[in-house]
Image (cartoon, rainbow over all chains, first blue to last red; front, side, top):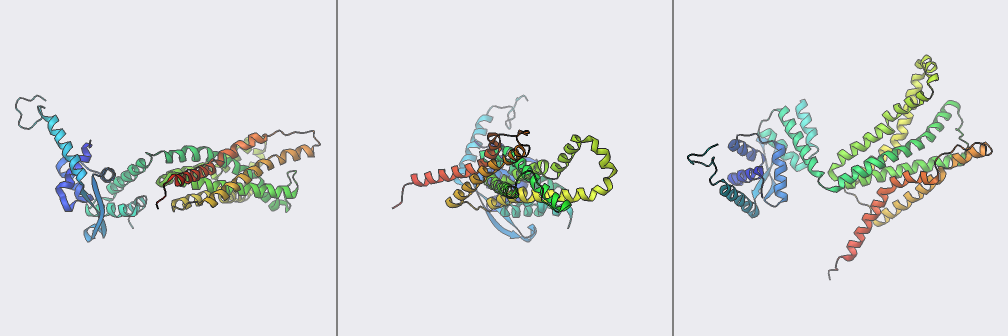
Length: 109
Length: 298
């Protein structure tokens, strides 16, 4: 089972597609969670997900915007997509009937 | 160069070249403030260091080598250093060798043998620490150097001096009255002491760590040669350790037995500092067995 941050990272990678790399993933996560995402948390989680075989990373091209430094590109593997799908389904199933479920009237918090 | 940029460069040196490129590029692209970048990069380095400690090997390096081997090796080093130091002092002050009751040949043999043993044990200690620690060698190596600093390095010198003065409190006023004249001499002897201990312990152990960091491995012949050298030096140091005791007994015509450790007691610290050699031999044995059990591809 994935952790919460691991799922967020996989979701950001999936959304960015071919443009998924360190800084872009970080901005994506910060945008949809409205929480700070540190370089330490990001790269340690990327390493862990790569070890588990859920993502693949490689060094991409360097750009002037990055001071001539290369990007660490990220791509989901089939195992990664499967793990993210399972996590999402589990969250969806476990959220049925909970007070914070969207559009549910009468829910008490 | 700005302090922040300099710090970022220094911190990222602890990361692999590819990751260095990626994270410094991210910091530039995100236009992060230097102070924030330094904090975040420190966080990354710390997290990566912590993740390296999930295996047992760095712990074995810390608990098995930095602890007991570091302490006993420093202890043996200080013993050898005492003999060397007295010779330097005697030559410098009076132009003659210092006599501790041993013959000149015995004195030379025990000093050469002791120095070679400390150099050999220090190198093996550094090499095995480097092999076991992998990327955690920065932490374990720093701790070993701190051990050196406290037990036989600069702090060790000050502690020895304080102990010496505590044992001869009556000499303190006399020393203080001559203090201005004694300062250059003290600095000179502290420098001699520090140079000797650096060459005997610090440089060989750092060289061993560096050797391991470069991924160099010892072959069967090298390991066996190293083990034979370490075993020979251990036996010789243990045997020669009793010479001074015998010399004092002989000099007093049997009236004064200064006591001192028995050969078994002298062997214990030597065995402790020898365990990295035993580890190398065991690793070699395991590799040999694995190679033998592997089926041959025809």
